[in-house]
Length: 374
Image (cartoon, rainbow, N blue to C red; front, top):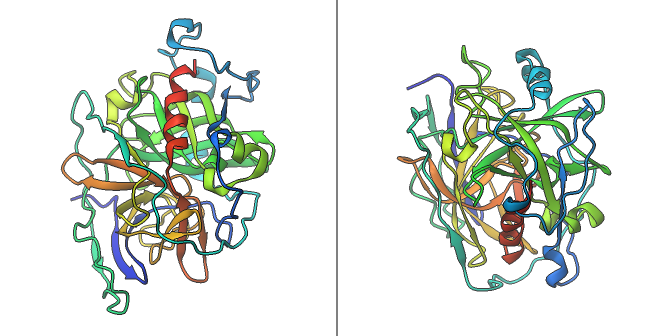
């Protein structure tokens, strides 16, 4: 048992949630209801990750493929890596998006299509699991009529971590993210506003699995620099919170110079199906204390419900910094892997409710498009 993790559990109306260190970008209300989706909603844009060292956000051709690769992704961006000193990592503030969503009207709980999934992948070499140091179980709410998730989170895997970037005002910021199993084994998934917001792509972006400032080594498996960023055009152009999802393609990195999924494993993905599902949520919410969520991973588990065209959960109250953290279905404590069914997007501080995009075929299309992000 380590001292680097904390666990708390709570159950609330329509959802039950257990909390582990997490943080989320926090507009104070639920997302807007866009027009009925069509095939255009799956369109996305990718750019070479910009830096303050001369790299501009050049758009990546949608027709590119691994066969067209001209960029060497087997080496880190040394200038970006040198920028992220331990002091800068520790001082990064939780990112809060610039766009404020509006309140959605409730809708029925009808799935949009047949459920699909892609599998998780274990790392090439098992890494030590990180166990929770404390458990607090709060009384469930008997008025909900919803059975709580029975399996608490006890393992904080290296698959989840922090996404750091430069340019938030005059300083550095962070979101939450997790490694996703894709064809390239190089992708992490996060919120759309964590890769693009306020008319600009994030710069000097790095991913740090299982970051914990309290440890002698706060980055236990190292740091990965980002080669490419991708998000939906619906987010870029319209601030559509139903498509507040982003992905980053990483260079080889970490302590052993590996692809991210080879080093820490990668979650699977699941889309469509029911809006109500058991979920384990991870992130770095800065509003959590003992330990401080800004520096230590938290988790929350429970059952989701539908809120407009998104999914929601009560009781987690994951605030700024938790944005982009994975909502994992069928999370396995032994492997530290599950299926990403959404990512933290927004929260309402007054009630502690969190919202996240409902994953449709569009999210699968986004994942598949990263295969060309060279």
